Length: 155
Image (cartoon, rainbow, N blue to C red; front, side):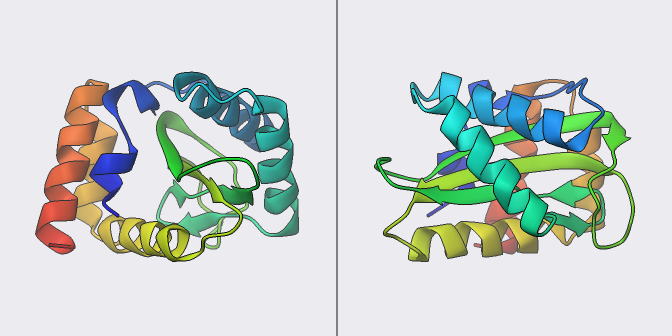
């Protein structure tokens, strides 16, 4: 499963104004549910916050990938957000998070969930990709840069 197939341009917040971690998680979870017509935004938000309380999904280099699995959804859903100011996310490297990729997937499937996490981690390992995404002016440009990086580094 390709990241570029999971994130649509209307699924990208280019100028996230949240500054607090849990507020940010809640806001993106509600956004993700809204753009995908999912009616369980409160449940999604609570589950991802619960997961975040267990262990931060801030993987370092200004990246966080909050995620959870749910019963009652039919496929993997993803949204992205960028915070120019940065958010304290308790990341592995103790640096603020600027790029957030939120993902929810069906409870009974692990392959797509794991593949998407792995692909995203590999793409974001490249400093020029992170830098380019931080400079994107529009959701369309953000998605175009992400697609180019996925095609280049994942194949």
